[in-house]
Image 1: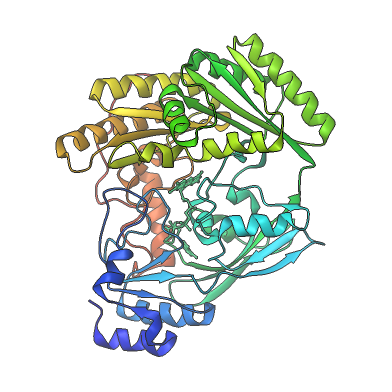
Image 2: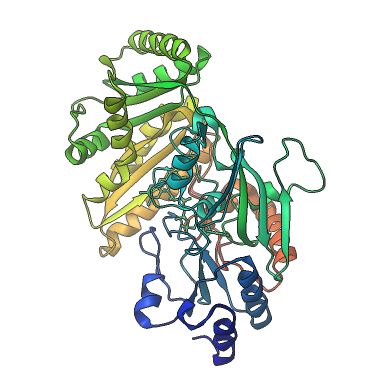
Length: 470
Ligand SMILES: Cc1cc2nc3c(=O)[nH]c(=O)nc-3n(C[C@H](O)[C@H](O)[C@H](O)COP(=O)(O)OP(=O)(O)OC[C@H]3O[C@@H](n4cnc5c(N)ncnc54)[C@H](O)[C@@H]3O)c2cc1C
């Protein structure tokens, strides 16, 4: 519970109705989209603007009260689970698009803007904000920046990081600073903008962001290629890229995922093939037509069972929407769904998926895999039941081995979901103990009282490394 003095100070800043601490309110903010993690905050606070945030942070820093910034709580790494209590800070009032600058091709937003609202607002002006996490209907820009989220368009257009030009944020001591801006070139000082992207709320609170826009592609076409095996699909992915074609989207779904997605979306996806590639190209009409023609030929040379090009934009949209619904579709199967994002170089996708299947078999757990084949970002997804302790133990062992394998193949433990609590015991596997220590030193310099999202990123103990043969 918050000390009465602290609670009163917070009420003086934001008003009584914006400090919630009833049991019901606290339970709602005790968990996020990550299964198996729950901890109660002491209060939930809703500031109206950056000045209120500054004052809140000063109070919390003085009294050493943890602050957990929270967008929509859709992260998959327990990043907004208030492990050490304190306050959950919401941005529900700070959800305005402040400016769309058509001369400089930028948009400036508050952190609580919903990603899809931003995408649609700029599209109305013929502009394009490419980062498109599948959660974009609910996720916020503040959350996207702090997780450095990616999406289906990541292969060609990059991830959130590639669009963040400038930030305004409140430091853990309550001071407000601005970094970057509308400039394409700016090398004045350390690149704090980049540092804050993916910081998972551990270094400060983002109160405003200036994001890069690009002209909206003239047209797009979507196609589906069916393969009897993942190897075939993997071969086609390598062949497309080595032919110097970068599709806007290059996704794959394995047979298990296909079955579940079709049962959910009912759009006629094949369920009796080994793997499917969902491919989209965008750009000027003649380029799109030429690229799609070449991709069809490459898939056929890679022994695709069949290749279908969507005949209408609606048909194309149905295919990408079905892919975006993969997690929700899989989540219907069992009480607990654990979705991970082990990532490997794209040339290793088929090998990694094969390894995931072998590991699932070894630990007798049910894992389907889909993901961004073009950038090697895979989503092995386990359907399980958290109430079954013995099974959950096997699931954890299986995922540890999956992360170890990803690293052995030159990959990483997380491509887009972040570290949070979930991946923190594995961070040293990727960065080494020295790397984690350097990060801790940086964190201490920013946040000596460790008030910003404590318990995230840095685990008390590193997991023992599983030995995986390359
Ligand atoms: C169905 C589903 C599909 C998903 N698909 C994708 C996908 O395709 N790609 C992908 O990358 N991720 C995906 N995710 C994960 C998740 O949606 C993203 O991580 C997203 O960016 C989180 O946004 P959010 O607003 O919910 O942030 P939250 O979950 O609320 O917060 C995420 C992190 O940001 C911090 N934070 C939030 N706002 C601020 C702020 N203003 N200042 C400082 N720190 C802040 C939080 O403390 C936390 O550490 C998916 C999740 C679900 C449930």
